[in-house]
Every structure is written in structure tokens, then in C-alpha cells.
Image (cartoon, rainbow, N blue to C red; front, side, top):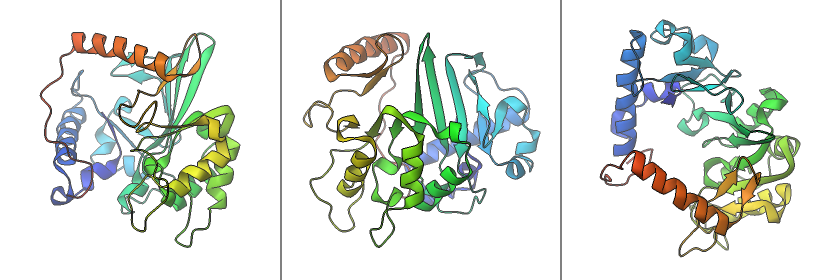
Amino acid sequence: MWVTPRIFDEYKSELSDDAEAFRNEADRRLKIAVKGKAKSGDRIRVIGHKDVLASKPYSDLSDSAKSEIGTAVESIDGHDTSGRFTAVFCGPADADEDADRNDTSLAMQVTLADGDCSQRFLLLGDLAREALGDLFDNADDSHVEFDVLVMPHHCSKGALFDSDGNADTKVVEGLKAAKADGAWAVASSPPIPKSDKNGADPPHRVAWDKYSKILGADYMVCTGSHGSEEDPDPVVFSVGDPCGYARPEAAAAASTDLGRDVKKARPRPKASKPSGYGRR
């Protein structure tokens, strides 16, 4: 489990059922990690700024249980993943743990590699416009480069535009500089609306159109309408041969095989009542 210190400061009365369960599990793992007794199933990694990690209880954690913003790890659950998986923690740029919850989202660049093929995924959580601008200002350029961008906050206009509807130059230029040739952008969201309504939650059409101008309309994918809105196909990026985006028919086949293997290895528990992260 990878978390930022903010999770331990959230008031449980303000969390959804799922978020409260996540917080409780983080609490449990932190207590074990402080004692230096964490094994598989109990491990946690707390990711934050140096001054925060130097305070109690994080100062009692081993180096394998904490990471500073701007550093990288090449291990998962105690297993070395050098040359196959690397995660660089590039944000949030601001150490203020009292900031708006979304602006304390963990941002990271994940690189997956197999032979000569590698794909860099830039995951920006729910960071909003000002926090994203700070990230692009402060992060090492190589830490924000991407082949695949997961659009912040489910393709929210708040990541790109101010309250007057003006595009944020820092964010737009940061994305242009960071994208690789042929880079893709993915909206993890319901289908993109034809037009935006005042006060509507993401995704937002205006944001989708802006990303399209930055990356190109042919390099845009929405998880809620990939293939079809009635029965969306999984979005798959292959690391191997072929390398890169997999068309819906190939993605569906890959997902079927993967799903069967996962189900066989670890049966899924009964689903709980769905609820999102955030306030009830």
C-alpha cells in the first residue's frame, strides 16, 4: 500500500465507507511498519516531503517504508523490479498537508519495460490547475515525461482552466514539453459529454477538447466509451511485442486471458456496496 501522510490526517466522519476502510488499513499497516515487522500483506510505503517524513511517526520507519518526493523505487512488495518497473514520485510539489485534499494527491511517473519496449505512464491523481503548474515548475523534466497520460481528476476542466475559463499556460506548456511523440491521453471517466453543464462533475468536454489539441484527436481514449458506451472495452497498453496502445479487439482478448488467470490465482471477495473516495 502506497500512501501520502494526508491519509492519516483525514477525519473519518468526512470519508466514504471505502475511504474509511482504506484509512483504517493504512493505520494498521503503519503501526506494524513502525515496529519493523511488516511482511507481505502488511507493508506500507509513505510518500511525502523530507520535513514531513522527518517527523513522528514517519521518522521511525525504515527506508523501505518511506520515500521522498523526487525519488524513485524499483521494488514491489519487497521484490526487486529493476529494469521492469520503476516509479518516480514527482508530486505534489507543495509540502502543505493542509491544502485542499485533491491538491495533496500523489503524482508519479511509472515506467514499465520489457526488452526494448518501455512505456512511461504519468499519473497525476486529482491535482488541480495550480498544483499541476507547481509540479511542472519544480519536477525534474525527465520525471514528468510520458507516453501515456492519465488525465487529472477524470478529465476535469479544473486541471486546465481557471474560474474565468482561461487555459493555464504553465500546465498546457508543461504537458506539451513532457509528451513523447505519439503519446496518448486517457480519461478514466464516464463517456465525455457533448457539451458541459454548469456545476457538472467531470468529465468535461472543454477539457477533452483541450487535451485533443495538445496530444492530437487520434491519441485520445475514454475508458467509459472505449469501443462502445454500452459495453466498453478495456484500455490496454502493451509492453512487449507489439509495444504501445492495443486496439479494442486485441485489448479485449488480452483482458479475458488476464482476468481468467487472476481469478484462478486469487478468487475475488464478495463486492461491498460501492462508494467513492471523499465526502459522503
